[in-house]
Amino acid sequence: MKAIAIHPKDKFAGAIDTTFPVQEAGRAHQYVKENRNIGKVILTVGNSAP
Image (cartoon, rainbow, N blue to C red; front, top):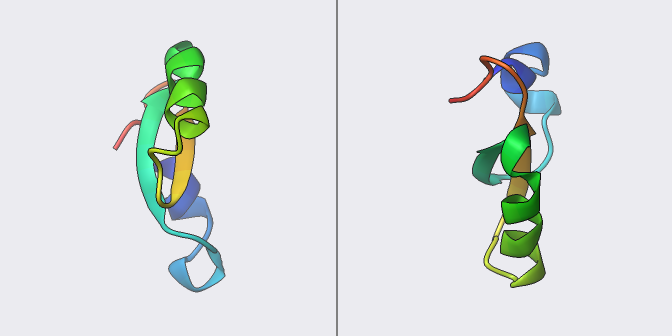
């Protein structure tokens, strides 16, 4: 994940619950709306998927 690589762990706040490709933003929104996440939900762009 490029976002993690850019921000060292000591500066990254919050636990990552799951990631979704940006093309699935609607599905990610529904996931959060249903309170299924415990940590952060990340939208990935391009080849930045884990």
